[in-house]
Length: 435
Ligand SMILES: Cc1cc2nc3c(=O)[nH]c(=O)nc-3n(C[C@H](O)[C@H](O)[C@H](O)COP(=O)(O)OP(=O)(O)OC[C@H]3O[C@@H](n4cnc5c(N)ncnc54)[C@H](O)[C@@H]3O)c2cc1C
Image (cartoon, rainbow, N blue to C red; front, side):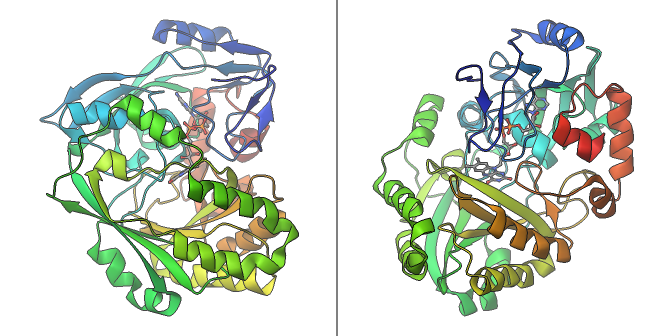
């Protein structure tokens, strides 16, 4: 965990705090003692890739850098147990060495396993759940320093509710995750006119293991990406060090051009149509075959803020069309595309995908650009479509609204209060939502 001048900030720079104490326990007993004796609000950040202030604390922050690495893998049962703060760029290669792989991943691999599980982070694929849905067990250190093993058999209610808990139940020290035999994927990128995309959307989603698209809202073509299983040869698998370096690679021509245009665009709205058409043309990359953990994540070096909502899958297209219609009608300035993905429904009470197969619609704004116009216009639409916010991405929902959109919200809040009666894991943002 990196502090600059005593200050912590998230990836986008939009969330900042100045913790009075930073504690870096080396093992679980030290972690339990640190939690028991810490003063004020205690937060354990992952790598700070959430856009919401879920990690912020001006009191105590826990640095879990020592909680990394593969602890056990059971190839027959296809499960693996990791120290909770293992970054995803290290998870893929460690599983691969055991002949295993995660069933799905999101756009990047910079986050920690605990961080993605805590917020219900997801990739795309109609038949594939979020990373939280792949969890089969975890060890949780509660506010009084007690260590709980949580799974379908032990502390089953904490397990059921705690797979998406935004770090409010305690600190996870280990996570056991379901895996698949290692596999290769072929990636295809192509642009489609918007009308054709919507005509073919259901079959594109049904016929590809993973399908997603990016729509620059002032362009009339979408950039589509599919991933499917293949037996074709892939280059030699990358090591954890190589995966780390790849994700940090800066200075790529496309990224530099994208950043430069995003610097200029707020002052040159007349360039919107031109840049959106240009990026729709430039964005589709070449087809390729890679081991799964290499092909899911891409480097994301141009920083932004993001809002993403999960909508019932059948309402996804109408919701997206309304988002684009509104952006155009209000002439909202953004240099980023809208990302559209699908996620299988799950049984995790506070998961955005609880009880329904979902489409996710994500809007982004360059990090130095005010997000208000774009995010408030889009959130009004997401609300109208019964959307549920991604916990790590910007939203303004209140506790009263969450109670309406999550049938088991009350159970979650009761369990949180039982595990942490004094609310030591709550900062102001979390207290307003779950206190
Ligand atoms: C460039 C970029 C791309 C992204 N792509 C995707 C994507 O494709 N799909 C998607 O769904 N999301 C995506 N996200 C969002 C991101 O995956 C989530 O915000 C995720 O939670 C970040 O993980 P992190 O390790 O940085 O956790 P943080 O943001 O640091 O923390 C998130 C939450 O996890 C909790 N937490 C962390 N460690 C522990 C622990 N040991 N025990 C208990 N709680 C803990 C924290 O307290 C906090 O509440 C993206 C974000 C960025 C910046």
